[in-house]
Image (tube, rainbow, N blue to C red; front, side):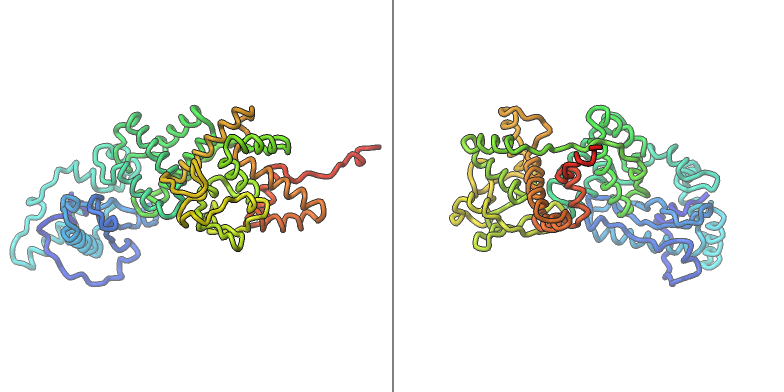
Amino acid sequence: MQSIYDLITLEFINEHDLEHDLEHKSKYTTPKIYDANGDIKQRWYVYFSYRNPETGKLQRMKNIYGKTNRLKTKAERYTVLNLYKKRLLKFLKEGYNPFEDNTELHLQKSKTTQGTNGKTEKVAEKNSIPQQEILNQTPQPSLKPKTRLKAEQLHRPTSLELLEAFNYALKLKINVISQSSYEDYRTRIYILHKWLKKHHKKVTHIEHLEKKHILEFLNEVQLSSSPRNRNNYRTVFSTIFQVLEDNEIIQNNFVTSIKPLNSKPKRHKTYTNKEQERIFKYLEDKDPILLLYIKFISYNFLRPLEVCRLRIKDLNMEDRTLRFQAKNKILKTKIIPDILYSELPDLSKCRPDDFLFTPKKIGGKWDAKEINRRNNFGKRFLDVKKELGFTNNYSLYSFRHTFITRLYRAMAKDSSPFEAKSRLMLITGHSTMTALEKYLRDIDAELPQDYSDLLKK
């Protein structure tokens, strides 16, 4: 029995000019070359899809590697893959079908070649392949592809190794997401890889990885930490596997079928006026840099990470405005209110690319990753909380909630709720009224008037 995949990579088949033929176009897609963007450290191959006779839908077939990845130069690889591509298209046009046994068809083609050339080309004898090996490579009508894959996949890997596939997906995300998100993705995906090496040593290639492995890992995360952390892992895995599906490294992203668990979001409690004043007074003597950092969160309603991104050039002292990279990666501009402007030191001697906040001074170099800069101030505030007796429900984020609540309630005294929210949107930076209203509900900023008179008989 002769497999279409064997025929494509044979060294001795004569090449013929390929004419454009629309007859079988609907049965298969035009073969394409995957060259890993020219990276010869990765695996190159030819890929195509063929219409499944049972489902009637186009189905991605196994990648065709041949001897490609033993070659060391791009030119050699392109030469071989173009040869495989032409041969594959030739066979598809001649009626070869990856879902069927092509032995009789190939023998007929061989006889035709024999009669035309006047000599015998013993193709089957010259390249005899054990029957069982051909069965492993060729989809059989009586077996569903998934059934055979489970029986054979741990013995005949044809895809990228796990770490190679993960690194490929991470590489494509590096310019799409923020640095902090990228570091989070990288950390979580490497933890998964390390766990697989320990608990499932036979899962070495991306084709070996199944939904049950991810579920087992997520269940361990849930039991050892929290449903919220488990959901965060699931979100990262879903994003990475979607990149692999979009780039045809895997056939489908099965992580999307894993349901997230219900989890209680972490609540950053707001401070009372006395609590906030107590913290500010303590920091005036103990850590004035951290105090100014907190005032950017409180008065300009920035997130802690957004404050860490500020450089001297982002502050326009003449116009009293600042630019910052927001959570959604859009560069936004806000005014610097007088209450904060009066707290700023002289920045004229600082260089434009200096960070506004560094561990020991305002304005200077800080050779550290974004996430580490944020963690520096987070740990410093943790010491303050311990000293003053605040629980873990209070955080740097709590200052943003506290002052937005205070501002909204002050605005609502002299205007309607809609007018107050409309003014507040310009200050907080929320993109929609719906998003702002949800935020206000989450932090309990909007409270009703006293309704005691309604309860009286």
